[in-house]
Length: 153
Image (cartoon, rainbow, N blue to C red):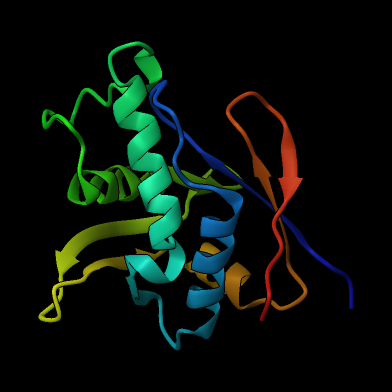
């Protein structure tokens, strides 16, 4: 069988993209394991707490020095985990594969265990691409660089 390539990109504003290759790879793995297009994922399962802490320190330290760290839709200062997860949700909602949206909707909810969860409704093409164990996902950075995601099924 022939390996298929899928190009993924985060569109939108000039904000700093917080979605790393590892976060995107972990998300694709979770979607791959799901039996249906509607998927719920604990944020910490795709974005480790150490990475979250790093992002919070970096964003809060640079928020008013660099325009890309301002996130005009977040008024709180300093930004906390809750706001960082909203940035994640918003950026994922702007993700596309082959110029079509990856998700029909994404909601950020709190679970009864006190954890943050993303409730996503994947587009059919993205869902089936995630199910394809022969798929090769290529992420395009805002500056045009490309890198292949490492997916561990």
